Image (cartoon, rainbow, N blue to C red):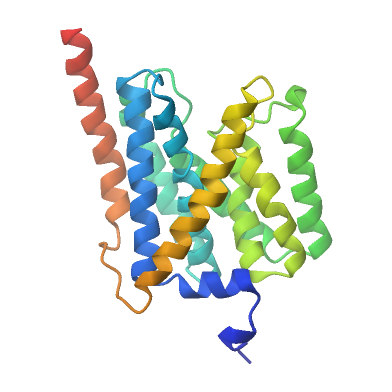
Length: 249
């Protein structure tokens, strides 16, 4: 028997309300933040501080969208496969636009989706155990928490954190803020940047989610596969602009 919306925990009610236009608005804001971040990296050599700060909103919002899709029962494995194909196909453009960078962020989205799907049916204690282990890795530099993928272990686990916060017992809500902080934590980084990034994700992301709820009742306005076309296209455009920029400079 389905639980009436009014009886659902707050996080679940928010997730249930983000359908149609609200979810598309979240994706649109995430894509805009991503373009600002990539432009800063590609054309300005990461020198625009506000570009980095704005960009911190992109990944968490995309991961929220992924968690909502999984919670609604999307067929997970074709979804993950599409993300992997997109990541592989886009990597050459990503490297051309942002030389010397890590694997493109869609690999993190794919890995995070797979972990969320795998962890969701497990026992409560195993889920919490994985999140505890992830936190230990984040704050122990010797364990290389950022190795392999963009956003490292925190980014890989964050979709699971969001998914379980919306669909599982309320005890999972305790992981939202620690992992939101961990996404951009570097042991040798500036604490000011850590705090600003955390506020962008929590206060800024929360404001965007609440703002999107004003669109409730409206149909989605983005084409179904818009992200799959937009992601490599914007990287190709940045790569071309960078090539001209560098040749002129």
